[in-house]
Length: 510
Length: 101
Image 1: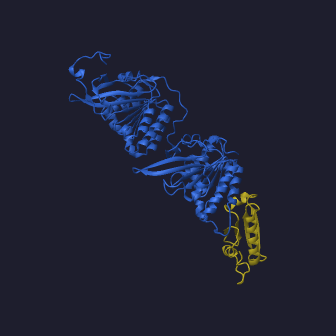
Image 2: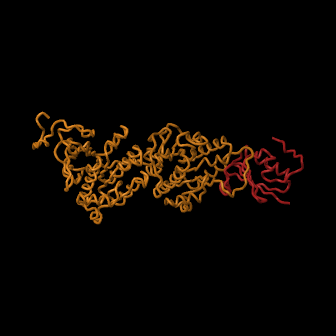
Image 3: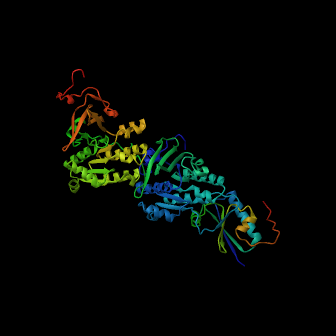
């Protein structure tokens, strides 16, 4: 065995994890998964085995030091893992190393080793032909054998045994604090190579679970903490599910925004797989644009999903009918589904899962999220970025034209660090900005396309008017500067104030 | 007289395994002459027996009879403590083994 041989990755099939780990866990090696209580270590250990059985039919051995097999079977059943059945089929074996209340009285006298445990693990691995082994959790064994030097040395032997058996293994261990040391009892000393940390911290009074790959020996992985959630149905779901899902071929099909003027500005409509970010202060026409976008979809016989985060269904219906959109009729046709939820009712990760589920079940061609800003109330900018990234992956994968609204720009973008702002820009395909500006004692609206990917677009800032028929995009605003900075200045008497009909095309001197 | 029955789990024929066997036999010979029985289980040969009793550490000796069962982990190098832990009947005041080791 040479240390220079490239280390193969074993895909875990844990939702999103393999993307963060660039392919999976180092094959044939042990990985330490450390975390405080309640971070999901046991679940990680269970899923690692269960997904092996489900996916590629790889048998697994679960060495339980803490919870007894009965509890583990029970917990796993709620995620749809029939461990008992797998045990009968020889695909799953427990090595029960938990202390039990009715155990014999035990004394320790003189030198000992973990030869019994080693023999049992080896036996179970050979019996089942296991390729995956989980040990959960090492801390429990330190509680039973007081001499931690011996325990460390013996666990080192077990880790060595696992290496010799050629299995890929997950060893879980406790941590006392979220940002100190790797693990209690320094168990990382014997699985130095690969370490993952799970965290569960309160941030702005909200739970935030993250997963961090601290190191993978000799191989790459993504750095930083990745949000994850524990879903009652899907188990561990790491976000972003990532940049690295196989790229879907970019669509060349154009679809209408529902507004002729806006279609024109975008170079003839939106590409079908576009993610559009529509920013603007409240009342500037975002929701109206979103209704138009939805109605255009329904009219074209496409399914549309609206995920409204700021308004109740009744409020939404009322404002829509004010603009002449009949949401009830669209819903009745089966082409529109509306989900209204307040951001506070669930964590960001859960919102994501609900949207993803709705997208996968309802299969919409168009998706509206109104508004992202509502989510800002409950999460950090970094988390929101992760959310958008992940959502974009799902939307592109299903070729869903997606409209995200965000109020007020100036609140969304500038609060983010430059890198995060860059990242947001890099993952939306079209950024549309709606703005108010003040001119001649009136509040006026302006619209600009800040970017479109893969297509020409109108670089001008145009006037927007809203009337009973909806939103109209008008002429170019050539005499106002600073609209995008939110402090516009009229540089010269605008021609429309003077009442001159301005001819199309550039003016002399432009 | 009660017959004592022990099962000693060892992992391979190591020095530690030998020490545990020797210590246990010496102790039984002195405390339970003629009324004890020792089964030695090598877990590397019979891992299923180790599984059955959920043996983690080796050597481990289990007093199977009389009940209640008792378990001692280690090479049993301290005879006095081992006798106590396994609940062996006491022998007259001066036990030659007592202060060994």
